[in-house]
Amino acid sequence: AAQASSTLTGDGFQVKQTLQNNPGGTPGQVFNTTPAAGTNAAKGSTVTIFVTKGGQVKVPDVRNQNYNQASQTLTSKGLAVQVQNQASNSAQPGTVIDESPAPGSQVPTGTTVTLTVSSGAATVQVPDVTGQSEAQAANELGQAGLTVGSVLNQPSNSVAQGDVVSTNPAAGSSVPKG
Image (cartoon, rainbow, N blue to C red; front, side):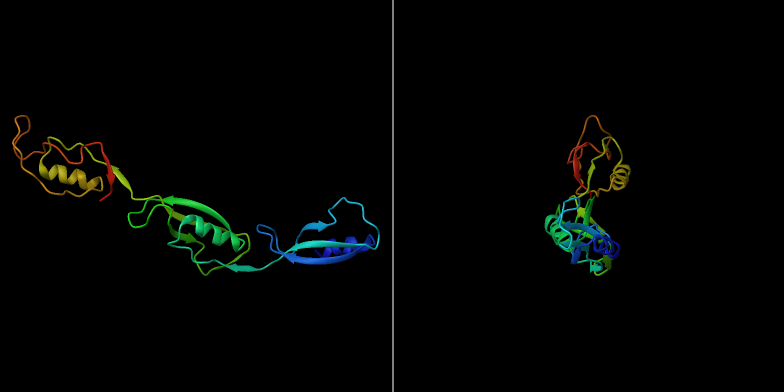
């Protein structure tokens, strides 16, 4: 800004400097002029230079907010937003789970805040455990992130006693983890 003022003054213009927020701009740098650069102006006339306001902004806490609301809050503070989706069994889809940098941090205007947003509950596919022993089936279901619910004993002509006849939900179904 000092160099721009000096150049304009040397060219015979009056200079008026206005500080403004300019998300993503470098503090102290000219980002616009009135009249526009390249426009003819009379010597002695005033050229207004718009300079990026410097400084820091405090990262607001937008956790547990809807993504759209959180994004609007951050951009209104001069911050940029990036999204990272993550499955969550405890947060509704579209809800901000976490943010980085941490809430309360002082950061330069224009800093990108990464929001971790819930994509909903994690799902897994039910493995086919038909014909396995109850212990083997429970182990495989556990490795898939599932827990065994109630066990019903059923007679079968094709599966040995004590082995799994079927599962509910059926093998291949996508279900919430847990």
